[in-house]
Amino acid sequence: MTPIDDLDPTGPSAGAGTLPEAQRLAVDAPETGVALWAIVFAGGIGSRFWPLSTPDRPKPLLALVSDRTLIEDTVGRLQPDIPPERVLILTSRDIAPAIRSVTAEVPEENVLVEPRPLGTAAALAWAAQELVQRAGPGAIACAVHADLAITFPDEFRRTVRRAAAYAAREQALVSIGIPATRAETGFGYVLPGAPLDLDVPLVAGGVAETRGYIEKPSEMEARQRIADGALWHGGILVGTAGVLLEQLAQHCLEVLDGLDPLRRGNLPGFVGMVRATSLERGLLERSDRLLVVRGEFGWDDVGTWAALRRARELDDDGNGASGDVRFVDAESNVVHAGHGRVVLYGVNRMLVVTLDGLTFVTTLDRATDLNRLLDQLPGSMRIHPAGPPRA
Image (cartoon, rainbow, N blue to C red; front, top):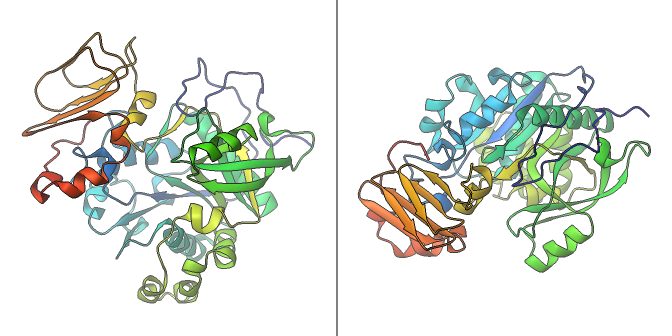
């Protein structure tokens, strides 16, 4: 069979946290005949980016990778394939006004505000039902988290189109898998099986069945999965609105009872009957019809301060900085100097964040989980004003 997207498998590739020397060349995938939509998950303050992230300045409104906020980057890189009028943003009530303030091009009715934290599985169900009502069950959606760093957006869009064509052809969910470069315990892992088209392997732009999915494994299990050929789930899931709802009804018991009220337009009934769970645990770990395509477009999950060393431009010693910063005999550090000047001398793998009235110092290793720290701080320090949303 002819490949949906004839990629050159010998060209340079971009896994997570790697920047390829040149963008891969690809031929555009054929049209599916159905307009693509996007479902963007943009809820939560983002406590792992404290003290920069606060209730008034949540993580999606931080400019952690470029000079634009994460949510602006997410909506922007979808265009022109998915214009703002076909983008649904799922967010929480407390940060909805801030989200709207930087996504004015997205129609107000496309910002779905959760009355309480629903979890991404229930949020996906709500958005999929919206698509059924607006465009029919055959509408194809790309569900994506708003905290991803993408180096090559053209290749990203080509990969999404390829996944959409396969999702429509197979009436299945398609994960975009990223070549794994380390045993990361905070990611999901998808294990590719046999290719659906025997003459188009995964590395050449094909699609494969999956032999399993595991979310956030232990380090030992992550290493075993990688040795067995697993890819990282890139936080990008593609499928038709009808298939998304069917799969949720079949596998996700946490949202099952709320689906009927949702179909009848009873949103309070839906909210009252669903239980919070992630789409990765509630759906992907349980699905028996999950496919995968390979994505190589310079991907990273901006989940912790340490991720900025992979997503940002670094100096010759591996330091990433924003603001007035000087490094002397220092390697692999991340500094956000939002106030004053910062000098690092003779230290490695440190995180330093300076704001007006607050300085935070820790190691990059300890910065992966700040909940214990925040639990021990007085409320006035936990919600310290973060200033302008530029990192």
